[in-house]
Every structure is written in structure tokens, then in C-alpha cells.
Length: 282
Image (tube, rainbow, N blue to C red; front, top):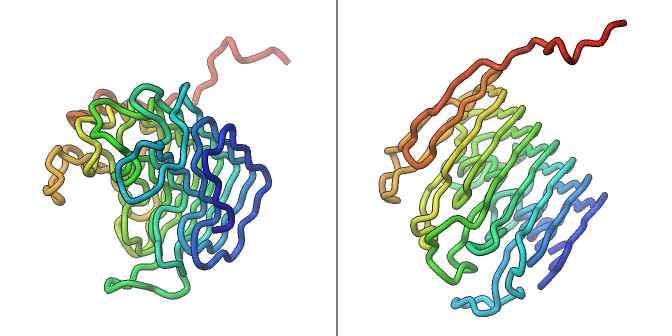
């Protein structure tokens, strides 16, 4: 790893650049309090660019516990940071920015991803289907670090604002999101080259239990190529059957979705007019 940090409180990374760490992660951090990444770049890291994984000490699996328990709600910020061709060369390709158990059922997390770019188009393809990228963003409880099956969500909100996702022939979803009360994608650009890109919500794993994303807001996002929002049903074996399968392109619109039922609550145009009270006389 570029850095491996255990049991880290109040982690702040500013102006950090990780370049050509070809074998593994750029930054692998196990926090139990807030984290902030400002103006960082991750270029050709062999696995994830940055991975945040919370493992409490009493976790029951083959990995050692890395963390004290949460004692308060946590906030995780990823801002003005850029990920280029992460996962191309390493043995453990995965999502460029990974949040595994950012909060707990008792102390939920808030996650903000803002003004960031995620771009992958590997120079050499891999896998039987000639993939040229993996995924951009993961927010999820994970079986190897979550000691209990969940009955409620571990994240209060995920906000993704003004971000670019440019992916070519990907082997997995561009983003995979679980166990979050509310998800917002706003003013983002999604590009899928030579394949159909997916934002996957509520795809179950062994420890999600009854926790699931409750509400999704898509506001003024633009796509090039086909990028779909897919909300999974409760049955994890139904790989080709979803509660909702819709285009992520919401340019000039705001769409609010009940993610538990797949129902569109509202779909409205965003006004381009400036309210009179904000117009000053010159």
C-alpha cells in the first residue's frame, strides 16, 4: 500500500498524490472518526485509490480488528480529488473510492463526494470479456468487517455533487450503494464507453439484512452512452429483475425515488429563472 493506517481518528489528507503504486491500494485507512480528503490524486494504483474500512475489534472473521468502536456519528468528505486508471495492474481490482462500514447502526455516517473525477480506460484489457475498467464508488457494509447482520442502515446520507464518471468496458457497476437512508446525485456527468454503465442500489450481500437505501434524489445529471440506475429486489438471486431500471440522465430535472419500492415520487423540471428577490437594480 501507499499507506496503511490502523485505528485512525480524525484523518485529514490534503494535497496527497499517489502515483503508479502498481501492486495495491493508494491509501488504506481504518478510521473510527471523521475523514477528509482534499485535493488528492490517485493515478494507476493497482487496486483501490483510497479504501476506508472500519473493522471493530470484536469482529468474527479471519481479519484482525483494526478499530475502536464508534462513539459518535461520523462525517466523511472526499473533495476536489481525482482517480485515474485505478485497479489496472493489481491482483485485487475494485472500486476506486471505497467506503466499507463508514458508520454503524447506532452512529450513522454522512458521506460527501464533491468536485471529483473518476476516469478509467485501461491500456490493456483483462478478464474473459476484455474489461478495461472496474468501478468508481462503493458505499456498503461488508461481510468481512461487519460483525452483525443489519436491521437498520449504517449511513444517513450520501451526497455526490459535481463529479465526473468516465468508464470504459467496466466489469462491475460504476457505483454500488447499500444501507443508506438518502442518496443524492447532483450535477454529475456519467460516461459509459463501449458498455452499459450501472449505478447499483440495494444489491444485497450477506450482512445487509433488512437495511436498504430508502430515498434517492437525481438532480440535473447528464449522461453520454447508456448509464442506468438499478434498484435491486430483495432476492439477491434475481440478477435480471429490478424494482426500477431507469436512465440516470436527468438534465434540467429533479427525480425523487422511493428506493424501497422503486416508485418515482416526483419528476419535475428545474427552473432556470432567477427569482425576483435575487435580482438587484444596477
